[in-house]
Image (cartoon, rainbow, N blue to C red; front, side):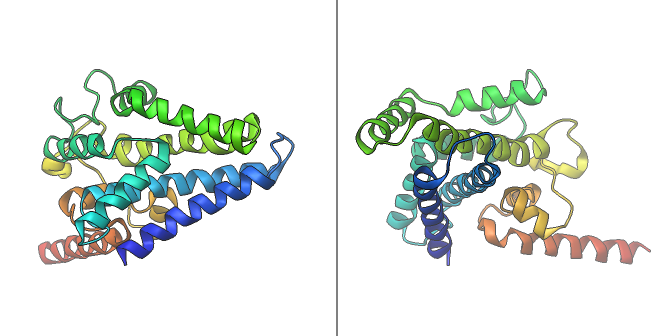
Length: 239
């Protein structure tokens, strides 16, 4: 199932990207353009979540297939380094919300300052070179207009970083850190599976992810239900 879900997201991302680069008019007066940008942004987020699940070895039990999909997903997202992501992400799980957490910014809780440092820590020179090469291939050899590349290819990836950061880092891990957040220093969204899926592929159930990192994104809602049920039982017992 993990492979099927991962490949579905990757195929939808690629298919929709090819379609919009060919057939969607880049015009601020075109309402359909905004809809396609929103959809492509959401699919970009799905790409990263797929790569994230691969880092947790949840795409496939076959490690070669699991890592291949992980490499592909994060490269398709923005030419990112899978090895660098694995190291940083596991440091995030070991030291959440501390100075040793590469996803956490100790100097400021300002959203944009934190997001900027988040981006700096994950951007590499090789990533920028790869994206520049792909841009020029699409523009010079394939003939995709520059406005289409900027608005329909680059902008959705950029917007996706805000979605991932807001729901997967800023909201869960910002201060104040309370006792309820536990050792994971992570909050969680209220139980609303539809909103959790639409907002960030259940990644807003972030305490549940840290408490059960071996659970794939598409089953996190089950961990959420178990936690809510256990909480209700404790409350009823106390009464």
